[in-house]
Image (cartoon, rainbow, N blue to C red; front, side, top):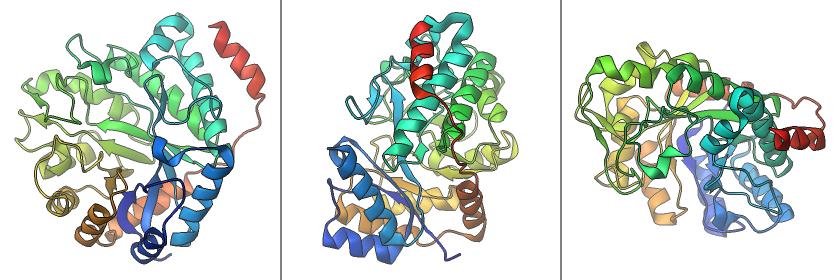
Length: 327
């Protein structure tokens, strides 16, 4: 298999420009990610997904953030509307694992029907009372063992529906009291207290793909996890995550520096692939030039992730939807 570029890119609009088509053909990003700006109709989304994959001449994974609640790129009538995850879990009570499996099995069915085959979920950050509102109701709970069980149900629902799960935000974002889209969260807790935050990622360390957290754990390093070799070694060795590690969006304001420099330092720290989301053409060129092709190890993990895609099992989606409403 030809070597992938060490990138996952967004694109600007509803269809590719000639410049985007030529650029993606030349740099061969591993995958792509869609946002609301890329979504108009089901036929248009399917055509865009086909166009993206044709550029790179492989069945590139096309990612999306389809958690439900605030973070849901496909909206009605293209997809079902869901409660925020924490509200769904609370409402389902003792049936929460089943409810979340069903919810994400429905999401997988809807995504795959539109050409999207990877979802940035489960999000197994353990919530705390102080967790910033940008994250809190996207979490599954306040107990690491419980969050691990819900996370597994989410991952299984996606995988059984033919969609790759992307676990996030490794090694845990729940202690963030600022929004990493705009500021760099810093966690001062001792390592002994962080074990509970890391536990869900250990429990799900067999998943094919994961996304980093842009935050500092002072007990481990003074650099953000995405750019920290110490943190990456901990993720690989202590958490035991063996899948493909992608950065969270390299353009988030938690990280300071040029996009090229941030991309290079993240890869050198141990990330496998750089995620760049906003579709800005000049920025993508800078990121691609700095990132280059995947390393041998990253390529192996990328191929393993692609091989983890399953044919969806046969289910009655109407029956699942009725079951979910009953919880």
